Image (cartoon, rainbow, N blue to C red; front, side, top):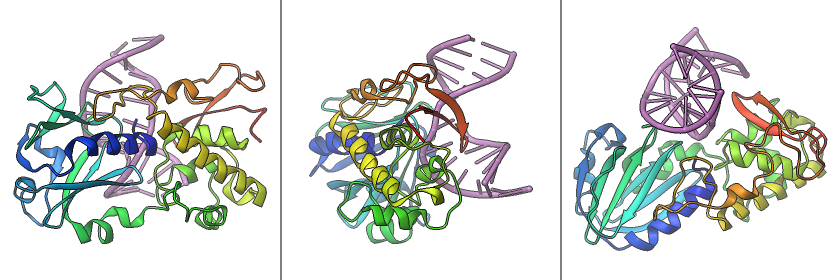
Length: 273
DNA sequence: TAGAGCCTGAGT
DNA sequence: ACTCAGGCTCTA
């Protein structure tokens, strides 16, 4: 499931192929996957536009087009954006085909949760849901003090707080569990019980784990692929996610699996306090 | 702040 | 046939 490292990998692998290319045509196989702005059809906003770059904000991809248009894409759980240099017949779950000057981009999504929206570029930052997102965890501005500030006076579990995109943008179930293991803090701890030292350890762990995920080009636990259809290899570095019942790789204690904030959560009761 | 709904496929 | 996977939005 694409979280920050996976979305960043899609951004990089896609940008190499599509930057500076014009979108010649769009085929909407399942039109619900896209949405225009103020009654304007998605195709009208996008066809004939040139792709000038791709940014990322949290788990959102921002595909910048000329004429002040931005495509905001969210993969949710099983969405993919694939680039093909040559014509490719759409696969079973392909919902949108972008025909470029050279090659095609296919948006596919088994679960049909992902969406691509076309918006005027100034609005895409000020008026959309992006505006409410928390800080980018890998930017210099993200410090332990910022993390503490984002937790504020909340009285929720660390698990719930770190999954909340308004607190911090880009983490999902995999990287939250891995960061908490790395920091040695239990996912059940309430955010208002953390010491300064624990906040610092958590901040460091979040940055280390996310950067390691990017370096490994993501985690392909189930469905994730980059724009070239390639898997990432961070799965083999996972310490806790998907390992409930197995021995902790650090201390040997059986990893505990529970449901927290509505999500399956795995942690080591001995290493994480 | 907890739960439903959106979806389909894999696993039991 | 049923459970689970889970990001996000909306409702109670």
